[in-house]
Image (cartoon, rainbow, N blue to C red; front, top):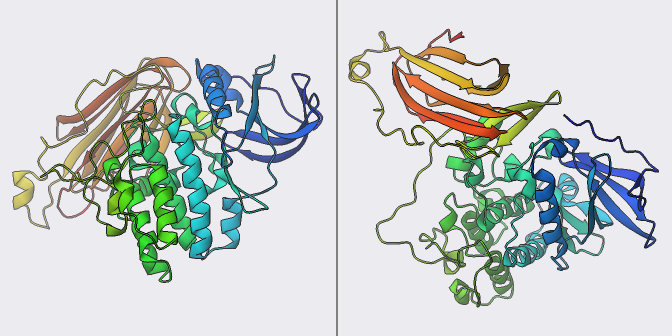
Length: 495
């Protein structure tokens, strides 16, 4: 793995950008205050992690997205001046130097949330910036308070366009909350390993708006990442009004619509959200917001409002969605972890990788059963007749194999919790349990290119298996069920 150059004050990048002082450090690199010696102006330089140099195609992807970000000329989006790579492999982004503080810092001083009017003023600016980006076909993928910068004059700037696109190509470090697609604000479809689109940004925006109004993101979990995944995928968000009775009902309804689990139930566009906030703020009707904006949809996006949205459970924002086809019901998601959540140990630091199930950067084979486990009954006949004193004990076997060694494996045992291990394939783990809620095992090839396969066997029957191939190839096998008996098996055996 590339170590990369060590940065220090006085370092000059490509003979033009002289670093002066470190502003901050996170999972996606370091930000330095610098001087553009050619134009004699202060700038901010973001130096990206050295790991990117080891990922085929990552640098080219980064440069394309940085160029697209540079074309976003909007007062609510940080201006990108330049992008470059030094001879020793350092990738960097040159941006306008902002004076102020990010919303994460602001919210630490406001634990109870902001006044509703102040929160709306910030939310409108975020929605406007997102609408401008989405109109160009650019998805941010990592909307969170740390990426929203508040200037001294009250203007808000959305940062890190051009970096979030690395989510599909590079290691996602979790140091200092710097993961691409931060779990506290990630949309359910991102946890499932599905492609993010503009509606994923809207969900993250809903998480941020909830935090602006209440002081807390909608979901937190004391059980770590597995509990957080479950909450985003299944639990309804806490009602804003229960935490802040002074918040107007239309804001609470908007938050709930933005946080809809199904993408089609969210507002039609960021522009519609901005219009709704302005209309409600002025005391006017928002009935016109259901009409999509004129002109063709952004490249790569469906037309705003499509696919058809479900019936909004929140009348205040129902005008932003279209009716759902008759008889269709939103699916209830009940899984412990999104498909494609795997642990990666890189450079001695634990990392979390979220990739599509059955796929890596090299492309997955998608072999094996899908996520549905409907063929497996919720209980066996013997378990139905068992008495509490004689629980039926089920045998559960996890298996991960692959063509490279070692492999990184993430295990969620039947009795809960999560462990991460670096193993030599083939690897198996056998458990005995009389009941369980979730089963999950996943793996990752890491920086090496190769194949990987996982499977879950229940009482001698394979209930799910998946395969993937490529660099950072990732698989995740899951099963959700409820086997009732007298308690969990006591002693899993690890092989």
